[in-house]
Structures are given as C-alpha cells and as structure tokens.
Image (cartoon, rainbow, N blue to C red; front, side, top):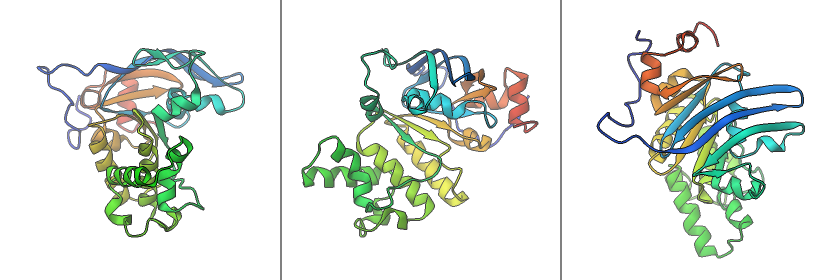
Length: 271
C-alpha cells in the first residue's frame, strides 16, 4: 500500500539513531462540554523537538485535544477533562499547577491571525514580556528583535515597528503572532490550523518557519490539510469521533497505515 509517494517529510531519525524521548505523555484523556463528550480515552506520547500533526475530519476533537495541553479548554463554560497530561513528568492537571503560568511554558497560535488591533508591531511582540514584568527597554528591544527574527519577519518589519500590526498581510500577521508567542520563551508551541486562512505563498513561509523552529521547540499542530501533515510533520496523530485511531511516524502512516480508517481518510474517501 502506497498512498503518497511524494512530498513526504523524511523520517526524523534512522533505525540506527536513538528515538526521541517523549516530552508530552497523554494518558486516558477524556474531555467534553456538559453532557457532550468530545475526546474518548486518548493515550499517546509526543516527542521533544519535533513537529506532531493532529489530523482528522471536522468535529473529531483536534482543537479540544491541543487546548487541553495548555488548559485553554478549562476556560470554556461547562468544559471538563479527565485523565492526565504530563510534560517532563509533571501532571498539568495537578492542583498545584497554575494555568496562567502553564500557558507561559506552552504557547498557542490560533487559526486566524489575531494581532492586537490597537498595538504596534513592536508592542504586539512585547506585550507578554511586559505582562511578565519586563520593563527595561534594552531587554525588550533585544527580545522583540530576537523573536521577530525567529519568526522570519524581522527584515520585513524592522523599519516600521511603530506601525499597527493589523497593517501587515495575513501571512505576516500570523508570523507576528508566532513571534508574540516565542517572545516569552515557551518550551512547547501549539498551533491550531495556523495556515487555514492563508494563501499558498504565505502557507509555504509558515511551513518553512515551523521546520526551522522544530530544532528548538516541541510543536503540536492541528491541520485539516493532509498534504501539509505529510510535508512538515515528523509524527502524525489521527483522531476520529474523539477516538485515537492511529499515531506514528508520518512517513509510515502515509505509506502503510495500520488502520483501514486511516487509509480511507488519507486517500480522501471521507473527511
């Protein structure tokens, strides 16, 4: 069986190299809203310094899954979650964990670019630093430039940092939002369909950026685009009706899926 022979990202490791240790361990995660259950006993490990794509048809629980990782799911009225998610062995749902502090370690980029409309480009990146107590201009300048460089945006905006962030193109705005997330130095970056509102050129820039960022970050990305998962992800998670159907190396899943439902989804028979 060979569903996709081209445009697959090469495997992250060879059989002779050690496997990446898990950074995030999800154990029997269930989540929902009121009486509606969205996720059903999801258990999996996610590696460090790699891109994991979470794919599946609309309504399968992809966004709920990643929002549970930084506990944004908690913020929805009526939301609930059971089971455990651990990062570096720490249970993120332990009573001692402060969700606000947790979100500084686990950043989030949303589906549509959402720069703060009344803020300049500079202030959009610096806002999290200021909220964390950084006030020295020299430190702010350094971190803003560093973050914009990491987001591959510095050269395009360095001469107009005082201009509104909303004046940028859609792709630039999304990279600005990534820079804003990186400025507070998170360990993990979650991305909820970060390219779905972008044109092909902007999408390619974001994908190139993600491939660069994975050298230093753990990235978990929801995508509705099967080809995108094939291009950028080291590992892929396939959810269906809130259940984990399959997880594994992207190259393996796309060329030799273990579950017939995975094959049907990848080949476009549903979704």
